[in-house]
Amino acid sequence: MDLQILIALFVLLLSLVVHESAHAYAALRLGDDTALRMGRLTLNPMAHLDPVGSILFPVMGLLLGGFVIGWAKPVPVNTMRLNNPLRDHAIVAAAGPASNLLLALVSAIMLGIVAAIAHGTGATGTGNGLMFLSLLFSLGIKLNVLLALFNLIPVPPLDGSWILLTFLRGEAMRFYIRLRPYGFMIILLLLFTGSLRVVLGPAMDMVGGTYDRITFFVYGLFS
Picture: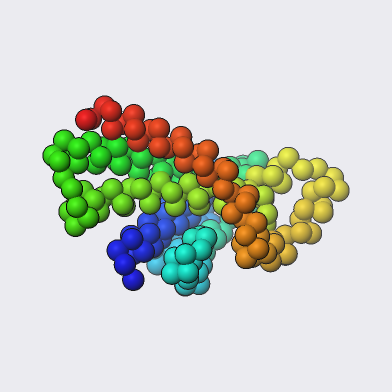
């Protein structure tokens, strides 16, 4: 397993942990302390990671050169303890992708600083620390943008499904709730048919381009 795969796996695991912790923190702020009482409001990876979704699935994707994605154990949310169950559940759901976009922003800023330092010192080669950091923060942008966009797809049980549910009423809401048990099969179908890449590709290019501009802006400030 080469260095890039190891770094990608590290970034993905860290991003999943932050994602789930953000759900737990948002739920607590909105009135539900279930995740706190169950030890899920923590950055300890052991509290969040799922052996299949957080390790096996991402490693297979990395080794096979496919779509690298993963998941952690869902944070438990008792909607009846939320101040406004329907609205607040959507906010709790949105907190996860928002945390990944924030991590991508931090990575973009750090990548710009590292690039400026490398330019200023004339550092070259793949074995130095600056190249390692460059790869780390570059993957930090790509994988966190991917996680955010993937989780915003409105297919149960992804975060986007809870956000969409806020806007549905009547029969549309009842139909969507009945769809929930089949959501994972729909996600797998999208993944293995290549449809997920078609859905996320343009969005990845657009959002990723925004972070690239942030990196270049920071690079200009420090170079």
